Amino acid sequence: MRIAVPAETDGSETRVAATPETVKKLIALGASVAVQAGAGKASGLPDADYEAAGAQILAHGADVMAEADIVLQVRRPKAQDLAGLKKGAAVLAMMDPYGQQEAIQALANAGASAFAMEFMPRITRAQVMDVLSSQANLAGYRAVIDGAAEYGRALPMMMTAAGTIPAAKIFIMGVGVAGLQAIATARRLGAIVTATDVRPATKEQVESLGAKFLAVEDEEFLQAQTAGGYAKEMSKDYQAKQAALTASHLAKQDIVITTALIPGRPAPRLITAEMVASMRPGSVIVDLAVERGGNCELAKPGQVHVTDNGVKIIGYLNLPGRLAASASSLYARNLLAFVETMIDKESKQLSIKWDDELVQATLLTRDGAIVHPSLLPKA
Image 1: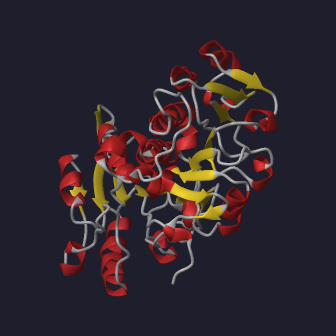
Image 2: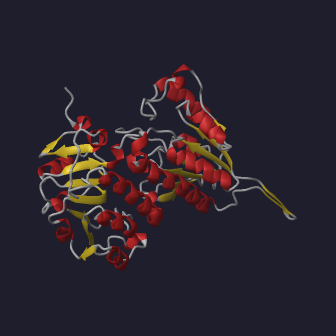
Image 3: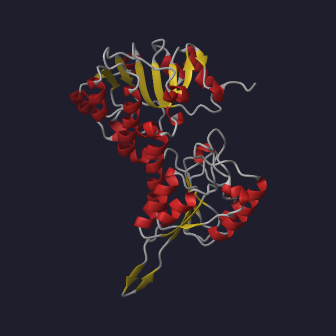
């Protein structure tokens, strides 16, 4: 059984899908592992470390992929990277499938059994495989660090002989994994933190971290969570009420971090141009949803720009990749845990259990066809 770890072909991707630590464990499962030269360089992992762990280092991606039973990647492989793929090979990556029908069809046409790691169900046995949580946790932390760097002032209250510096006010919009880590990080740095979310269950979590919760707590708010723990899309009426509450609060904040995402849909618009105009010069907005259209109307993907009234808006792409070593370490362990469920312990061969709930939740393509229900045409 052969496992391939090609280098990422997206120029903005700094993470890698396996580390020397996980390579050792994959080999212990009975696999041979091929890693493309330079695959871990951006994560601070030299080829020599992979070789020492037992991996074969190959110069070209096509050679790495050839005859592989399992392919591990961070991002979905491009069509041109699938030319030499073995029929039936399992390809594990963050597939970002919505609105990418042509790219997913290319995986099907190549005969891949493609698994979207971001579709991993949030159940107890899959916690160790939850790439959304592992990567969002780092994104929330990095958002505060980036926001503080651009803010250019101290975050905690400082009492000195020369006078007192007031604590910065930080507002977190969206309290998922990234939002909770952002709250915890901002609190550790000494800021005054408030947070908002449409899910009622988050109020207690926010307050347990020492932040103040802000939301329109009406009847719709009490029903605003899916069975899977995600936020529902709110009515126009609720959005208007929440926007009015948020607008008055935003004008008093120093740093605002937005993290709101709805699976399979564009990011909800939380901050309008008018709201930005009400903020003080020197204040900062960090938009973690910029890759999905942005929570802030004025956010620009991949850029930090300053508005006419002096507000800095950070639209960095791939925030976990700004902590590449840590992000790769966690992501590689997520993949390892899922791969372990696919290998027969006695024969040491790939043996996917097609009726496993983890497989059924994440499988996008099989036997030349797209099979995931969310990607099939509606009846």
